[in-house]
Length: 453
Ligand code: SAM
Ligand code: SF4
Image (cartoon, rainbow, N blue to C red):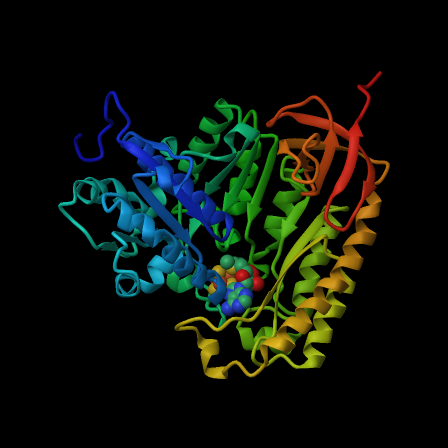
């Protein structure tokens, strides 16, 4: 088979990819799958059946990072049994650790960094043939963002949804965060290429597009076009019913972007994930977030003024080295003030080569977990209360699949990002009108709304 060429006839083998972490990692796995499918590989049902096993890893917190090594330990006997199987580590841990992975797990064949996905087709034939081993590519490339979009093997496509990368990397320097190291500096795609991808997706039946970037609202292409321009242009593409974008940085949430969200509404969904990290201006300054509590609240006010009823989500870190009990209480009071609909909360975890390492890790794990539990309980009550506003309302649900809670029910999301479970004769990718009958802090339950008279 020629290098990178399409094989004819029998499949080149089976592949299995395990993914940890954020939407960007999920989407990178779709690119890795696309690169493998392009070489004639087909998905395997598990690592036991696969000729190529890839672990696409996350290193945002130590626990996530360590999971990779326990998974490698689990795969070691399989690799010993079938030495011809190619075992690779990709993603953020690969970028962070590089060749050091071979020292800890010498049976690994391949280490592929976050900006080297496109190298896989070149490295794989020799690894499969056994003429090479211990391949490592962690070069930070500028062309990493230009993975051919027609080759991406998208998991969500059958459900009418697709991720589209618009920015890769991050130019911020939040003191606690390893991402600038693991994903490199920001690089943006040209707007025309993004729109070409959007058009090719709608032609295949995709109705919901989610633009991705570690700081997606930093988007600015070579012609100076920003996320505001991109949203306006993408919302005008026939077939685009829902547009989302994640993750936004509060400091870059400009008035112009908020205006664009309003103008392109309701195609731009009334939901925004805007990570605050802390409610204390003192902690935010120490984290080098580039905004304070008042600045963040002003953005929330600007969003709610333009898009009444918008749902909001956020991320919070508890136990950051300088966080006192009073600072933590300020975070609790910020939750009361904003009333988020979704919260992702994390205990601070020290990360290699980050500025916050200098501050030590003075808050005990027990104290961090105590704050985490209090924060989550506080938010649960807010979410429980806020969710009640949906009861009795009719909402549009884009169906994702069977509900995990009840096999006879279906599940999907509303434009506001609320999960809805309901019983009906439907299928993934369909949009249904559902009347909400009950609500918990985490999901809604409903029934198909009667068709309009
Ligand atoms: N770019 C996004 C932003 O600026 O908010 C965040 C992306 S990061 C992949 C996702 C979340 O992980 C962050 O919002 C933060 O809450 C959390 N996180 C990052 N570093 C962390 C650390 N060292 N310990 C605990 N949580 C962390
Ligand atoms: Fe990490 Fe800050 Fe960049 Fe978000 S903005 S990825 S938290 S450095």
